[in-house]
Length: 245
Image 1 (cartoon, rainbow, N blue to C red):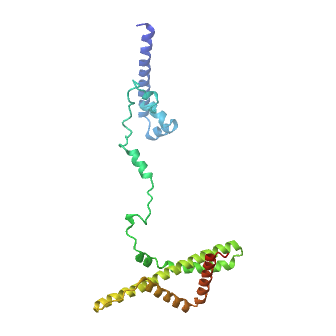
Image 2: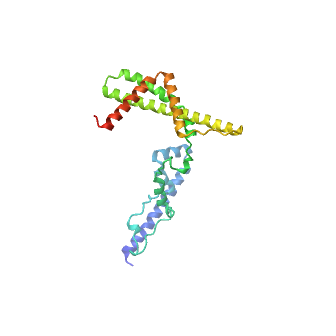
Image 3: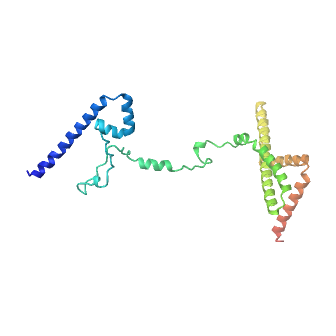
C-alpha cells in the first residue's frame, strides 16, 4: 500500500474526530447557558444549523423515484419486476370499468321491467293532464292576440289545435268507457235476474256512439259547425272520386 493511499484513509478519520471534539465542546458551552439563551441561540442560527452543530444530525437526502434504468431486465425475455407497493388490479377490472360506462337504453313500452300496460289505469292516473292542456290553450289564445307575425301565428294556431284535439280524443275515450261500463252493468244485472241480456253488435254500438256525439254537439252549440265541416269533407271526397280538381 502506498503512502498516498494511507494518507487518504487517515484523513476521514481525523475529520470525524475533529467534528466529535467540536460538538462535545459546544455541548459543554451550552451546559452553562440558561434555557432562554439556548432558545435565542437556536432562533439566531436556525433549527437546521442548530441540530447539525449540536446534535450532529443532517437532513436525510430526498428519495428519488426509480428511473427507467432501474427497471432494466437482465434478459429481454424476462418480465420486468414491478414494485410491491403498487396494488395490482384484479383480473378483468378493465373490462368491468368499460361495462359500467355503457349506457343501457330501453324502451318502457316493450320492457318487462316496466310492468304490463293498462290503458284504463294510465288514463285514470293522467286525467289531470286535460286541465293542463286547457290552461295552455288559454295562454296561447292570449299570446295569439299579441303576435303580429303571420308565421308565428300559424305555429301558435297549430299548437292550440293539437292540444284541443288531444283533449277531445281523451273525452271521447272516457265517454266510450262510461258507455261500455253501463253495458256491462246491464248484462250483469240481467244475469243476476235470470234473464237473457241483449248483446250489442258493432254496428249497434257505433250507432249509439254517433247518437251520443250528436247530442253532445247539440248541447254545446257546435252541431252546425260540425255538419258544415262534414259536408265539405264529403264534397272533397266526391270531387276526388270523379276526378274534378
